[in-house]
Length: 268
Ligand SMILES: [Zn+2]
Image 1 (cartoon, rainbow, N blue to C red):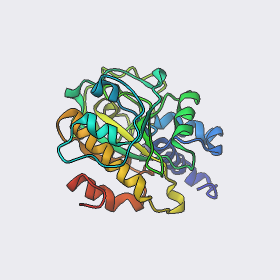
Image 2: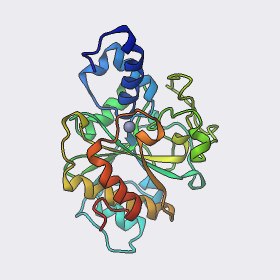
Image 3: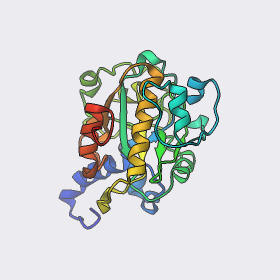
Image 4: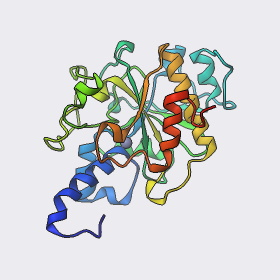
């Protein structure tokens, strides 16, 4: 996109770049520039993921273990089967999200090579206050930086009309701190108040494949979130919420379909 320099394309490009960057918040050199600032501001919904296992378990400890929990396992058991490190950041919390407001799981790509740990540090330091609840490394390890029952700005602004379309009209619980409108075409912010964000370390530009370990960790996280709430949230990707957004990447689409239909990336 940087090659495009004509004035005519500039406006469109700005919108596209904004959308692209919004979705994924990873430490990237280009984000320090003007473009990055814009996109970050728009996105506001970087991809952040953190949940409150704490809440689920009543305690918070990084659990490590093999992937996979027995069928019918409790949220606590599933969480323990995942390699989750809690690194909660108060500044990335934007309000309460009681269970009755949980409706969606939004999938994101970080669009960078940085580790989940680095991504969380980036979110906590760049001033945009954007984050997803969870970030999943390529090796399947996971970092959670926002509790499940709290709002994180991972979805950012969505297309006009999407609050109604997705049934996420109550934005009153969101403090909106750090947000910056991206245009009349995308004024809706409700998704953040009704969802959990899962970010995968992945760079779409390279068309790289998602490692099996990472995909299995995503399966586990979704099983955990389902068990935690006692119902299946609808799974969407960031691009569904905001048209033109880059994430998730094309390579993820078959997995997304399987996740939506069977809650596992391979449809098993
Ligand atoms: Zn995203």
